[in-house]
Image (cartoon, rainbow, N blue to C red; front, side, top):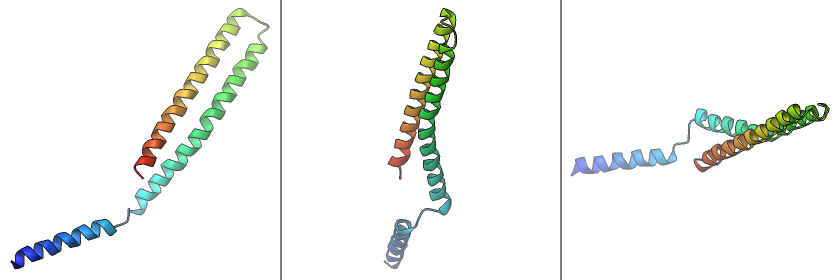
Length: 102
């Protein structure tokens, strides 16, 4: 009987220690680092996409209506837009997953 009480006391102490234990500082610091980094990436992707589309649009305007250059710049603008959408969506999914586990 004493062994059972001692075992039960040990389990209760272990369980209560696990509940009251805080996360280590390295874990919370790493979570904060990822959240801050992802926040910056979510801001920088649309800015970089807009700048690249503007750059290709400017080169398209300066091409003197050369059909080959216009087609190439249109293709590059479309590719840049698709890459920006994919990047923003991927970072949004990663951010949502990180928020879920906090």
